Image (tube, rainbow, N blue to C red; front, side, top):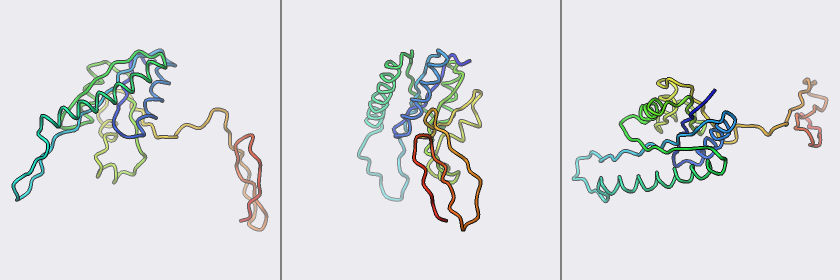
Length: 184
């Protein structure tokens, strides 16, 4: 079903979950992977005082490229261990979501995998999350991965009906765990 999967890589710890999930899908579908890192933009603060810039735009760009290279290399090593063929791409632009979508179109990707920390809509807006823009502008499906989102294989919960408050009730547990009673 999927021949090429784009995985968004950034500096957040939750990105590891997206890489792991994207590589699992790629392995299952015998697909290639494109790791994409959007470079941060150099912004000059606007104020009434004369600007003091400790880092030049060129130095900022070199530093951003070095960090992106390190992150993409780490992702490619994980892909190599999983036996998945991978490529790496860096991009930049005014809109990170649009940049990722453009890479997905140019590389003919069938799926975009991105990580989310599970914040609400207001926090995503304030922190500049790329997820809402990806979902609305992507021509291909977008898989949003949260860290720890997948349950262990074979784990099932036991569902019991509710009892009146005066009686102890059973607690839903995974297999191979002891049952215990909880008083309400």
